[in-house]
Amino acid sequence: MRDAHPSRRSFLMQTSAAVAATASFDLAANAHAAGSDRLKVGLIGCGGRGTGAAEQALTADKNVSLVAMADAFEDRLGESLSALKSSPVAERIDVPRDRQYTGFDAYKNVIDQCDVVLLTTPPGFRPIHLAYAVEKGKHAFIEKPVATDAPGVRSVLDSCKKAKAKGLSIVAGLCWRYHAPRVETMKRVRDGAIGKLVAIETTYNSNGVWDPRKTRAEVKSEMEYQMRNWYYYDWLSGDHIVEQAVHGIDTMGWAMGDTPPVKCFASGGRQVRTDPKYGNIYDHFSVVYEYEDGTRGYHNSRHWKGSESQVKDYIFGTKGSCDVFGHKIVGEAPWRYRGANTDMYQTEHDHFFASIRGSKAVNDGLFASRSTLLAIMARMSAYTGQVITWDDALTSKQELVPSQFAWGDAPIRPVPRPGVTKFV
Image: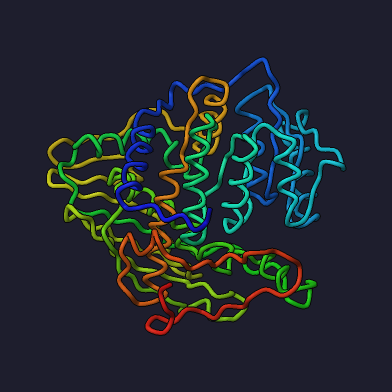
């Protein structure tokens, strides 16, 4: 499955269908779902995002229960369960001790017992978890990004194709696509309000996330050490441009109708997070994407403590420009969003469960795969110092994720060096 090699043409056809589905999404129509049959929900990945997703899922539909949970670590599962039992949905938490699973194969135990699964582990595990969920006929919420390498993206594409054939819903955690002000803003851009697009600028500059949680002296193996500190290892997170900055890169893809670029060139490195405790990822990236119609996309992201944060997206056209976060357009047809705001995290789950209760499945996996690969190709370019085409990225054979998982040794890959690190 991980060796499938879709062509650029087939990928374009798939993502065109995905953007059409997104364009028709009516936020106002998605009231909380309700149905006569109780849905059993399973949670795989019990960190903060997973805990939040579980509460949002149970809020979206009043006739669902959380019945099983899995995580690599028992303490993380316990913390999540305690938080959920103290939340507004506590009365629908039904996870006794014999439905709490830990370890690398725990996901199978959960998926086998539920109707709907929430996949919120570190993204390196996402492809194998989704593949099993679809095989077993389960609806899935998948957090972003969907993978950390190209074989993983191809696996997710294959799973999405199978899910569509089975009528299963897959909703992705690229939550800006469910934010009412942004949905309306992007619809106007796509409808030509600023003319033909010329350039897109996305920025995700922040002070970073949590520092490493454990030292090697506090854990039993290298595998545990890397998984406890998963954000700092490329096979687990994809690097911060893939794990976090993908939101801005997804907005770029959205503006372009989910049509992939021809190529990109990028730079990056470790200027601030130089201590070995920060694993093998970079702390800054700068990327230029070139599209077939001449449009260029510019992305910058960094994690530098003590520096000014900026998370902004701008789109420039022949008739005006769009401040995406400001939800406004200037130029020949000035406009500003004046409608209601929405909780995008809740809305995506409302939409998810409405699709399950309704007659039409939703499948976000195609545009989510494209956005993930957009970020991965930029990382490839920065790591190697080479221009990377879309076809290069889509057909790359580099597998960052181990073929087997076990507690014990784990590869310690060096920090990539442009001009030395090779494209695979």
